[in-house]
Image 1 (cartoon, helix red, strand yellow):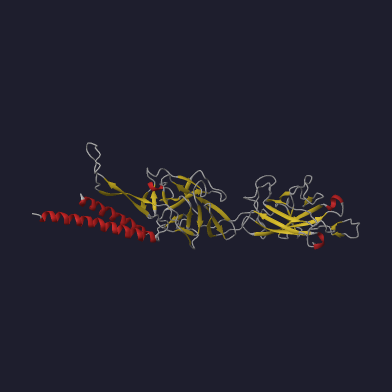
Image 2 (cartoon, one colour; image 1 turned 180 degrees about the vertical axis):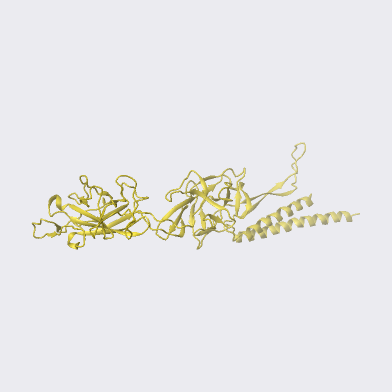
Length: 470
């Protein structure tokens, strides 16, 4: 029996040394989870079920090799597509964009392939919620995440608007100083100065307006143009002193009428006594659709800025509808406080064409493509998978596992949800192997192996003694 006991010990501790050796070998493997050998004793069972109080075991057995999914240390890298999971969960991979078979890993070393998909070194495709509009993700389905590597086309201001049309393709905010004492005549107060009538053309001068604001807008080719608003105070007292005419000009060449009438190409802003914008009477508004089809040139010629003939002028697409307005101008954030004139904001939804410059990933897994024109689009969101029994996963090498009946099916969702961890871009999770502990374990297992070999040697000596009695 001692031979069998010793032999079982040799086998068990030899395999335990294999486990330790594998842990040590993978001490620098990103996302590796170390394993521990679990032992169990072996007893011979009586055929009649009688328990023998002098029962002696017949050895040891390696019951299981169980992985430890404790968090490894996180190390920063220079690759924005290196991703560490800080907490629970696994990345989900698939073999190609079509195959939906899932593989799971903690190794977050990714890069972008020639087709723009995020993949690991084994060619596995990282999966998540995909985006079709660059603004949100579709959480109803999971697929391979693609960033793409193509440039994005230009967008005309107010055309494919990301700002609600009711707010405007261009939002301009400014404060018109209520203390300014320049206005259209007639002027009776000697402290006030009369402005010249606003006349668009070669004789235009700075005494025709109080203030001006400027903002960049884009035509359908992505070319940038300057939209300037000229603000003219209507009078020196009463409602007139709280009323401003606004003349909108493109590139200091084309005076653009609003939607009400081409005969009076201006908008009117009115303010309450406290300087906040008042709701103006029709047909005026703090939000107006600019009509680019019939503008007044500084040379006295009428131009249609939605036509490319003659050349040499802006070319804005027409928004469908009657009349066809190019985009909306919103001045609802304009005020008349007793503060110095200041342009507070200029928000518009157009941009020129841009090429991909970098990819960024936040802690919730949102993958954003950043372009040379300053735009950023959400390309998708990485999902994390969790298992009720991660020790039931089957290792298939290359830092990957597959689900089994013992692990159960995965639950999947965005990082940070439930008990899923958060992501850290530009970082990797180190192996959780503790070299010091493994070296100590190796010494222990080595001594156990030697001790079992010694029991075999001792039993052999006893048997030899018996043989020599003859």
